[in-house]
Length: 79
Image (tube, rainbow, N blue to C red):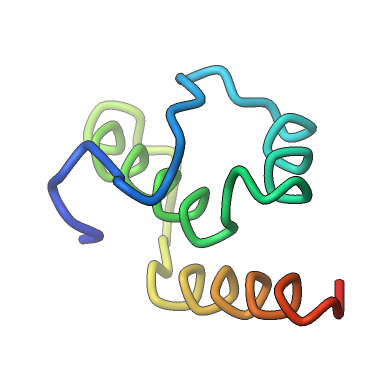
């Protein structure tokens, strides 16, 4: 799993209705990091998958690694 906590201190609270466009805007402006968005998504999957069962495989490690890479590229201006 990705953890049991529901609060993420590094991520602002955008509520449950953050759209793709809203997330992209928040990442571009620096109000949200990719790693925080992915972590939040993984937590939501973990919290709801027993009822929803929408995923065959969830590769937490790969998702978090990709988000870390994306944040690094943003920080260095490579995006």
